[in-house]
Amino acid sequence: MEELEFDQLIYVSKRPFWHFLIALPLYYFSISMVFKTLDLFSSGKMIEALKFILATFFMLICAAGLTFTKRVYTNAKLKTVKFNFTLFKIPLCKDSVFENVEYISVYKNYSDRDFEIYIWLSETKKKSISVHLDLKSAFSYALKIADGLKVNLLDATEKGNFKWVEKEKIQ
Image (cartoon, rainbow, N blue to C red; front, side, top):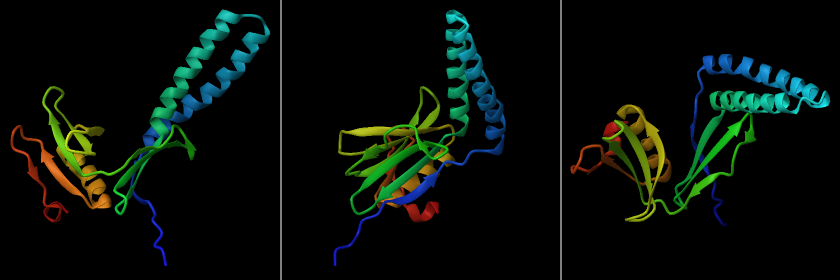
């Protein structure tokens, strides 16, 4: 019998409650601003209506930035990782899928003083997938992806001293 291949959910972004508290008035005012925009259009005040559309769009973008959810799915058999962004279960964009992942690396960006996580698709082809301000959260996220894909994790945080991470010691 043929074995079915399923993607495994390995990460879901967790939003603090205060993000929702800030976003709630933004959504509320955005809805009321839509009605005001319609009123301005019906009364012939086009410039004011366009200003309201711009302000409404800005408020919706801010609210969405506070409440969207990121999910990461992996498939160890196919070596694929899929990133999914939703806003209240509504997809925000097409899923980003990376196939034939060879390994994951955590890199220290000395110019910005942050840590980037790369997915390596070949010896020369890599994609940055995440930026973190501290080493612990970067390694935690990279380890989840590496474990889900069953690939190696490279510590590239020290210039010229790259080393493979023994995942058992971190967990």
